[in-house]
Amino acid sequence: MLIATLALTGYLLGSIPFGVILTRMFGAGDLRQIGSGNIGATNVLRTGRKELAVATLILDGAKGAVAVLLARQFLPEAGPDGAMIAGAAAMIGHCYPVWLKFRGGKGVATLLGLSLALAWPIGVVFALVWLGTALLSRISSLGGMAGAVAAPIAAAALGHRAYAIGLAGLAVIVLWRHRENIARLRAGTEPRIGGKKA
Figure 1: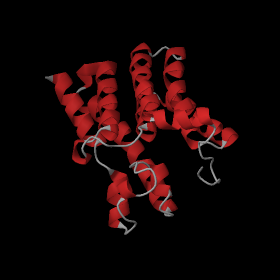
Figure 2: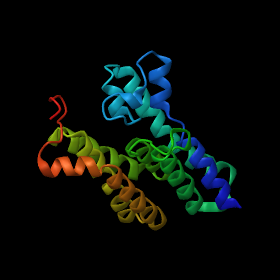
Figure 3: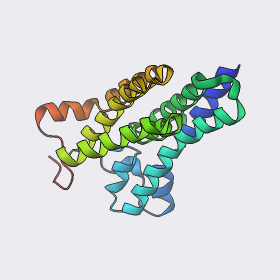
């Protein structure tokens, strides 16, 4: 029952489609009909509304963080495993929201948020690898995937075994959600930051 409560709470938090809500609320259109159709901050940026993209990034990250913090606050007896379950459920909710017929985002921002809440050094490594890779390669998707993969490695290096296992599973989901980007990377057609889409 405890695990079910953690998972359900996390999932419902994660499934709130902030990108869709903000773009509709501020007259930027239906995000699912724009660009890639993704509900994340990168696609919100394609509306030309940078402030909405930043807000979406922060709120999507907050979903993962809040799920972890709520688990620790109200169900402390669940321990590290409980926090990991709640955070993982939030990311799964973001990627597969029931309200949008399970067509959600790619999970990078939510994964960053829950990583910071689990143990801030893990989140810092995630963020640095994400930003560093994106800046060096000028490929947003590559940065997100690199950050996701770095998170479980950082958790293991810092001695957080439970987090390392959970984050590794979530990194696999991020890679799966980016499978089309990976195909374009291999073909050399993935768009670069500031460049025209191939």
